[in-house]
Image (cartoon, rainbow, N blue to C red; front, top):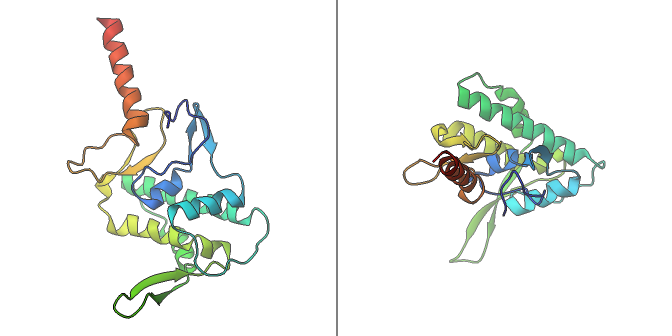
Length: 195
């Protein structure tokens, strides 16, 4: 992967170490310009599959563009809540709760005796249900995770968020290969030209 500033729109990237943050990172800066990696319903469906958050039940057909618009609405709700929670502002939990109501699911046993497993099966009959697991991930992030570990990338030209799961809890970049290396190169050049 090249850096987020000069990379072509090949993402979205899964580097946040939390699915709700990866969800909001589907809108990023690419070549210095805001870029939405979702342009169609299929883009959203592909992301849900890649993230392991696709609905398990039968997915009903919906009007073209409905899933895209719903995903963009949910993304903005989650982004707003993450930013508000990070700055200590009040959260608009009702908007997210409206999505959680739609997250219809049930438990299902799989496997054979001696190797039984339980898994949660999500309905996908409406676009809100298709995004139900994402809403649940966002709620768990806001309510159960250590929010001091939720951080925006420190690179000034990056808008991505991440959850710091490092042992020392000192992660500064969305990805060392992306923004961390850019910062190192910039510091090296500044020292070299000033020296």
